[in-house]
Image (cartoon, rainbow, N blue to C red):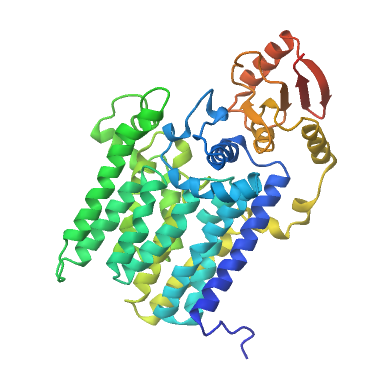
Amino acid sequence: MRLFHPPRRPAVLAWGLAAGFAALYTCVAVNRYRRGLSKAYDLGIFEQAIRAYAHGQAPIVPLKGPGYHLLGDHFHPLIAVLAPVYRLFPGAVTLLVAQALLMALAVVPLTRWAYEAGGPRVALVVGCVTGASWGIVRAVSDDFHEIAFAVPLLAFAATALGRRRHLAAALWSLPLLLVKEDLGLTVAAFGLLIAWQARRGRRGPLPGLVLAGVGIAATVLTVTVVLPSFNPHGGFDYWQQLDGGGQPSPWSLAARIGWPPIKWLLLLLLAATAGFLGLRSPLVLLCVPTLGWRLLSANPHYWGVSYHYSAVLMPLVLAALVDALTRTDPRRARRALAVSALVAAVTVPVYPLHEVVMPEAWRTSPRLAYTRALLGSIPDGATVAASNRLAAQLTGRATVTLVCQAPTGPGPEWVVVDRTDPSVQAPCATADTARMLVEYERRGYRRVADQDSLLLLQRP
């Protein structure tokens, strides 16, 4: 006797799983914010940008520097669609809930396609693996990022491409151009696969090649024209992360792809998430643009399985898995699904989704209560210089800069620092924070509070 019968209607199963994961994501993200684990980089930055959009202003982000226009950092105008919601419900929680809903939406198309490919049990496995996939779970618990929009768009686009619905795939992929500059290369990959699939069709490969050209042109335009026009330095800040600050040779770039070995872990985990069977699907090639810049970069944050960078790969490798399931025998399909499910199960305790059932994650420590009271003493509308995590708690109601930034004019009205903040390398090194605290006290700022490594200064 089976204890659980998956719903016989694919829409019920898909939307039910999406709603369940949206609730889990929201609980994890909002609770981490409640506990003070969110950061100015990046939740505070995006809140300042969306707050500006919500008031009809350009996305000027003081956390990045005086007068810094965020479209000079990355090209993500699509985040402005959250402005009306933020105007109604101002605060960082709005961004976290929106991200949870967007990420969970990726479950819907993949579950429905899996239902068509193998029935309700296969759909249940694919839906659960998508929702619990390590890349998505890591992203929803790691503040807010623009790729929250990319994850569902990629899921719908890859599903449409796998079903040979070329127009739908193109239309779902095109908004990626407004999510981030590098995703234009992923749009180009969609175009090339559409052209390859349609090479013997009535319309031929031309529409796909046009889409590929649009994707490449959009990336070139944003990186060489749009971003430099808004950037205070007049360039694209991330070129140096690709060239390592020098002029790399083709041989050194090729050597970077496989070294250091942390990159092997990334590739292995992606292949295992696809049950290894997904590597036989052409859809896995959609991962190449994102993997290319990550593996070639000189920034070690891009190489591993932490942060939010792998979220955009999850719908692609799982779409490749479903596509491969449609062309293989049942035994091999069951084995691939088992591997993919095992990866999701093993990584759940590693990534923050498990915090939902941890009692200690929901407790309010005395220090946390004191931190809230301390921040509550700063009035709304004030100008504040804060350490990384404390800044994220204030961006919804104050003008916030980082404490390590040199003050402009008379300086901020308040300075608040958590000396135990683990963000000691970026964006504010410990030495820089200490130096600025000395400077503020030299200027006559008085100590309002200094307890439990929390320091609050007020301008005279």
